[in-house]
Image (cartoon, rainbow, N blue to C red; front, side):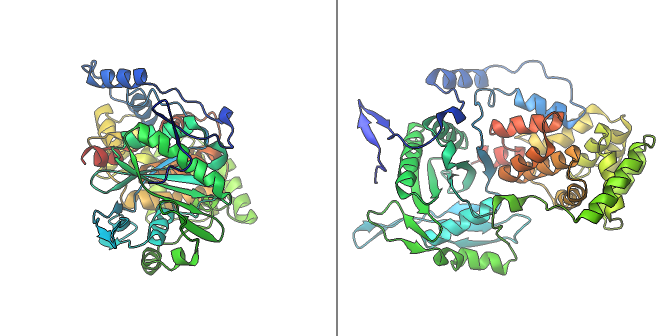
Length: 448
């Protein structure tokens, strides 16, 4: 395998220096910290805490887990799950005396796809699958996909090229190892081929330090892509990716690829509807507490029986109530009864019932993938933030649903729109910085 500029010094792999700002990386990892983590995981659990009565409390409790406390954030690092179900083909062999590369296949078992499977047969298929999984065409960034022993593509990490440092590469490698990966895909998007080789070299060194091999590496620029695992590989046109079997199948299934990362977020409505929603927001802010009415309004929005700028403005105002916000969240969780939702809005919900509901999102044993209610709720919240762009509660709930789906990039960007100082947004932002996946991802990961 090419070394991508790596060199051996004193028996240790050292990446060549490359152009990056080391000040952008804050991480503390060592063998002692890993031993400490293992020790804490093996320690008997303390007395069970009181049941959290809201999502903020449940998320804060999860962030206290020893699994999360040692990983400090790298600015700009986005982690997400391969919710679209990419799998790495297990077929290997030799052709004309050379080892054949194995490539991912796309297993479409999510709400976005009907259940079927498509095996990728080329690097173009691999790159199409990566782009479809992250949801947009990456630029000036590196994408690392963690491959588990079963062949499942798990965690996907993306990071701007100007934020890549040896420390950031170490953090990505630790996240890949925590995702139970034994191999990884490393794709660099940018115009500088020499920089791409250095970035791949640094990440390769970090992955090797965590006993993770590089199964596929490639460089993609504005016009071509190149296989970095093959010496002197020719540059191929991007049209190969756009016309690949994976891309063609996705188009046939109605799956759209966004042009940029910014397109992952809801777009603002026109000025006149925003003004109308703003007036409705102001009117509702002066009225007395109407939590029951707010929950009923939300249900009618989900049912498609209410819409329009005034409704979205009214709902944005109601979401400023923590009880209404949490009731709206619970309404999007599978198997949560209307009684629990209503009790949450009234402030009389049983803590154990709320904890069981929230476990579907964050608990690694009970985690569930979001269902149709969550996807309908995301559409409704998108309308709210489109009409009331400064609604921190609505942006936070939309970000939470994006994170639950496994889209860390969209969740991080939505939290930027929510701003600083909103407690649930701050907690979720911290969870993303720690690389904390939703419960269903950890359940799927640990079951492999």
